[in-house]
Image (tube, rainbow, N blue to C red; front, top):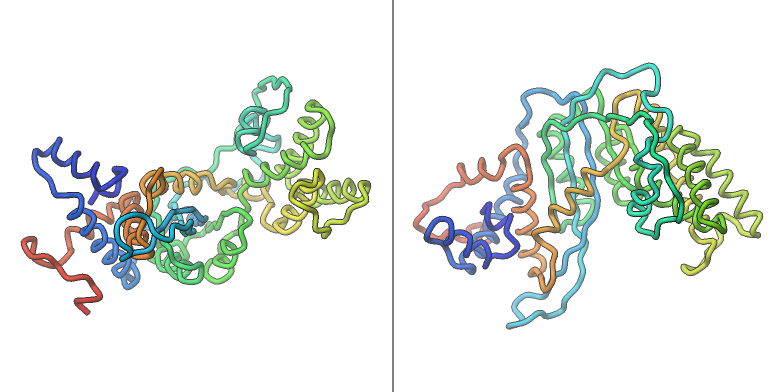
Length: 369
């Protein structure tokens, strides 16, 4: 099961088994077992309620975000039928340790990480401005350090996935932590889960997503690369220091000067669209952007680990000519991949207690029921 969760295909899992062990199972057998155990894992986690953590986390951090997976219709014969892109739901639960809260902001100036034009352009997924960036020795914010992470991945709808996240957080005793964080980007379904299940957690908007909007806004605001970079630094440092309202006001004034309003429905190709998008994004999330307070309290301010988790999930489920049977096959591989990526050994733990005879093929859960 670990090979099936880590290698890029069932065929590769078969080859790896034979190369390392001298024997193995067929790809079809591995695929059947993945479908079966993936279904069992989903059922097991839906009914397991006992706490897993012995010690309540110092800092409990919950994140969630969507991914993409390609699916196909089942029972349609050879080939790919009705191919479609489907959204996956992914969540990270990090137990962290952090210094005690401080009276002063440990990192008031914008760090060099967000002052390097090449790095920032990569974050924003845009071309880099033609400017020179002289590195300086500015302080770097050292957020809390991860102790242990578990994760979930599923094809479930957001309401059902929110229930899954709630159960996992309670098993990890996250609701008992003194410092509790829910960090995400601005997607509405993420914050609907926060409101329904994690409203006692400090809501934090991922700072990196704010950087993406600010870089695009600076590009649309000015006419030269030097002026754009200067504008980006002004806007981003203001947000870093918690002056979000000032940035929203500045963006609104620029829109007004161009004869536009914040609620104008601008076309996608409008050169002013990034200004309006940034103003709306910051205004809608301003109550989740008190970054100086988060730093004083020793909390994370980016969801980079969540982005990394999605890439790790995608390594197994997303690729050229990779389609999953919808919904059972896709759900099974996501369940298995997530269990494999959990740092608490839950896949091994489940396989050890999995009932049944090793010499007899087990019926699916639906048939057994």
